[in-house]
Image 1 (spheres, rainbow, N blue to C red):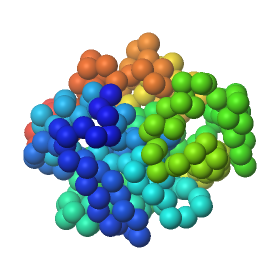
Image 2: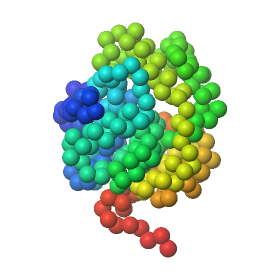
Image 3: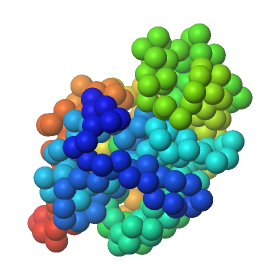
Image 4: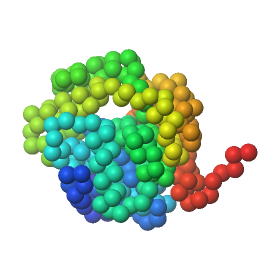
Length: 269
């Protein structure tokens, strides 16, 4: 994993939506914004960025409250973070950027696609739902989360240690705990998207999921595939929520973006 002080790409900040968003830029070509998962930071894409930056101008962001991007409020929501992305693109004059989102990043990308249907030229929704399931909420509880707080003692020790290093803006475990309470409230907030919301999406959209996702049923993403007008579906075999970033799994994602961003649509006949 690339350390925060790695100099292969300069850390930059841009004022957008009232916060200073931390990001790094790689490659050249059509702009591609990469949105990481919840409790992670832009470093989580360290091994994937070289593949994408061969073809695109990559912007890897720290989402609000994550990494080096400070949250100026005491709450988090997907619409709020989607508004951050809109403002980020506007501040950097990025016209119709592509969006790659995984987990919480995918939820942000989905919100963008629903509320701003003309914003992006192509969306990849990785490990993303439009309706949370009972299995999903049970998974959160097994991790120590409730709608109002998180029991850090139930959390995997490696994860707890990672939080301290991934988010240097938090000076101590108490501040990390407050951040995780915000994450828990975010994850327990119902999405409330409707079938018509998905039918109204206009951007080409790749729905990308592992076939062994805990709490994220394949059946629901198949429904999403049928509802979103320009959807494509990619199910990665023998892959869980955290294990479908192998090169063979990313190939279809790169190919999807190349077709829709470079103007070489594939014959569908």
